[in-house]
Image 1 (cartoon, rainbow, N blue to C red):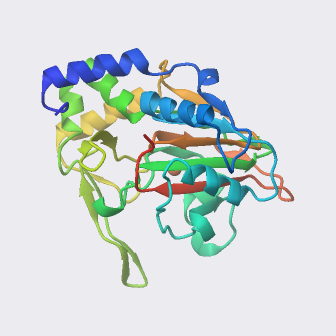
Image 2 (cartoon, rainbow, N blue to C red; image 1 turned 90 degrees about the vertical axis):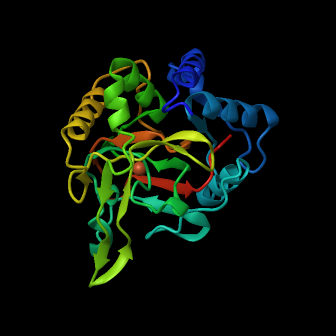
Amino acid sequence: MLLDNSDEYQYWRDEKLANIPTRLNDCIVEIQNPFKLSNAEKNKIIDLCQRGDFALFQIQPVDQYDKAIISINAQFGLINFDQHLFVKTGGLAHITQSDKKNQSEFIPYTDKNLGWHTDGYYNAIDARIRAFSLFCVNPATQGGVNEWIDPQMIYLLLREDNPDVAKALTHSQAMSIPEHKVDGVVRREKSTGPIFFVDELSESLYMRYTQRKKNIDFLDSTEIKQAVEHLDALLSTKTDYHFQHLMQSGQGLLCNNILHRRNSFTDDSNNPRLLLRGRYFNRIK
Ligand SMILES: [Fe+2]
């Protein structure tokens, strides 16, 4: 497989570099009817997800955005959703500022900056998030820009730059997230695993990562600590493969759990920023 076979890796690398999109405008698909996508719309989104692991889309205003997004996602086979803490009917979480105490402890539900991560990095293997959708109902008054990069490209860039760094991040105990307890009850088991690996189910290179420092343990080894520093340094640069976009009302992202972050924002309390997010167990392909 590509992680330890250099011929396979080189073939995979050349294919990836030949096909990966680098211009945001080439990655936006206008959807006429969210309840019935045309073949052309569908094929374009699938093609973009195969090449660069994401597609942006745009829809016209509708009465119920939840229903429109659930319908779009289902047309890509995104049906089985992660039963996450704050998920509402149909599998979508409303990402907006919350003043509910238990919810506002989680950074996504605040107006704060959110560092680079893949979704569900703390999930057990049988609940691995392979795709997610993020749709903007209402942007913030100011800020809230999203930035993302295909994790497969990050692996490729790291390996081209320094194969030892890429290898260190495939260590089976590279990153651990301690169990999550509430009032002495374990809500989530400890999660230990590599940062890069080939996901058996989809046979695709997968990344599990977060830049948050609280409650994250990296394996106590110089190689791994230095490799994580390399990774963070690469993420903070700008490459042709980094994308940055402020989603407007009616715009959304469909992706194979790309690495992403968000800038802090300022809200209008009468009309707060609202994004709908769905997390799914299968890839878009
Ligand atoms: Fe996220």
